[in-house]
Amino acid sequence: MSNDTPKGLHPLVRGAIIGGSIGLMAVWFGFDPVRAFFVGIFCGLLGAYTAQRIQQRRKK
Image (cartoon, rainbow, N blue to C red; front, side, top):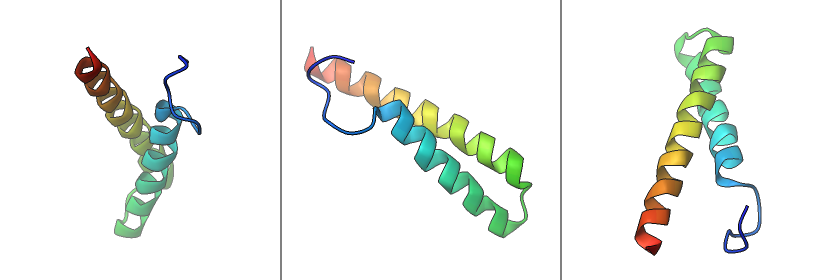
């Protein structure tokens, strides 16, 4: 991590937590809990990585 990152959780970790939480909400609609959780984590990681790359490009 570089010194210019905000304090708190790393964006990828935050994305995984949020994605997993949203994935577990899919269980309300009849999805398999384990699959929904891991698909949510994967999507959260991709979203956080994309957002991080966009911010890095804007700083240049």
